[in-house]
Length: 597
Ligand SMILES: Cc1cc2nc3c(=O)[nH]c(=O)nc-3n(C[C@H](O)[C@H](O)[C@H](O)COP(=O)(O)OP(=O)(O)OC[C@H]3O[C@@H](n4cnc5c(N)ncnc54)[C@H](O)[C@@H]3O)c2cc1C
Image 1 (cartoon, rainbow, N blue to C red):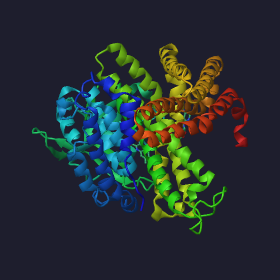
Image 2 (cartoon, rainbow, N blue to C red):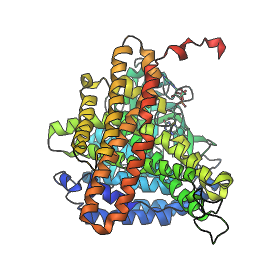
Image 3 (cartoon, rainbow, N blue to C red):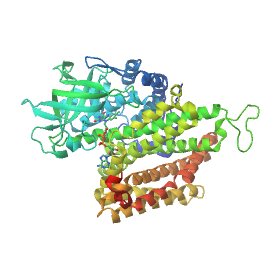
Image 4 (cartoon, protein in one colour):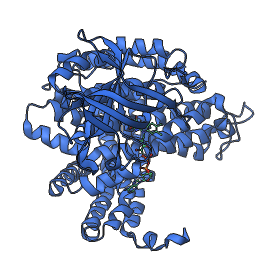
């Protein structure tokens, strides 16, 4: 059976030694979370993930969700109790607004818990995860009345949330959506249409399900400019706020899919269902983007989470499985063979995953801290700058962490040889579960286009330049230190490649947009490499300093330093290949005539 241990020590090291948690104590919610409180909270969250959620991961995958003839859906055995423990523990509303019953703690902490929880059980985590994203959209765009009605119950977990964008004929191109909203004349709307692939669309975990639905008000313009956002509850709340009257929305089917079997992916039929407008008419995509951006960070976390869980299992297996002898001579001559871990090629796979996990965890935390600054800083300029960087890096986090998360699940499966292909070991589940993260919340190709087509040009390139300057300043600072130079120089070189690629787009993609499209995925990964290299530079710096001041921590810090070195030597040089591909442009791929495919 697969194992999982939440990396609490790693999270605490990043918070305290790398990012300097104390520096944020002026922000609301941070003063309630000094390091000792944070550590106790993470240990508590880790316990829930390790002891309650993880044991349900494999059984939930085998059992899946069941739709009954009346349209109701049952989740796998144990999920109800786990959901109760999760919501009663206050984990859904950890970072939510205290005015509505949230704990108001830093978003960064919620991000850490979400990683642990998605490692332990990704399919389960999506139920509260979508609720958290729906809470964010309601909080930012709904009227005070809707907020008062929905938020307390969603924050407590009594009610859960969903996100309804996709229709049979449109996923990426939402401008095509057909779901209709007809005014009822009393301020509400009658919503009709079909949504597909709706995660957590119907289930038995919460007393009500609050659907956030994109629809077109009768007479609204075609395309994305005519889309509005509605809240459509499964049960319409009565005067006392209790869920009572059944609404005209039902689950027509659940999809049979590759992974995340324990999460119900539903076809949702809306048949004149009563809905309430969120935000302004025809500005629905704008409001939905709050939910999508929040959810994209959650999905990025899923990539890291699956990579981490798969890694832990692969390491355990590589230490136990005896096969062949070390190239340098037997390491355990008393045994019939040496463990897999002696083989450089097995170590290559494990080190590649490990280097990714450590840098991706730091990258997530870096972005989460920007989210906290963007929402909570008293300084308007700081809020704006943090929000800009977060906007720039969100597609990079989503695209890179999920592409690599899947690759790493496959690599960890490879460590198991044939046993990785057999269900009972659990490795093929990591692969199947990780795969969807590359597709939903905007397929990764779309994340890359968002980065290159929209985010780079924002504010005349000021945001991306600010990010480059931040990395360059760190490279310069660390290059002055002989001990850090071997880590700083490769990051400087990769940053140089990224700057050249950016310049190449400026010179070649304005007049010929296919050049941007052809290089976008490479660019996204190139930026991911630079960001992760930057994170490992900060980690190496913090680890060297900690090692010098705390002899007891030396062994653990040495492992961090080695991991950073491995990344600089063996992963970061990929930046040159990305640059070469980007600079080759679109001509060759676009030259192939359609009939030749
Ligand atoms: C298990 C699961 C859960 C889901 N959960 C939800 C949910 O909760 N709510 C919800 O609303 N949706 C959900 N989805 C839907 C998901 O978000 C979409 O499937 C996804 O956004 C892609 O849309 P599509 O499937 O229509 O693919 P398409 O839009 O047809 O895209 C197909 C491919 O073409 C590429 N492509 C499309 N347009 C372009 C372009 N202009 N330029 C370059 N490449 C392009 C895409 O990157 C993709 O690789 C879920 C899907 C699944 C499978």
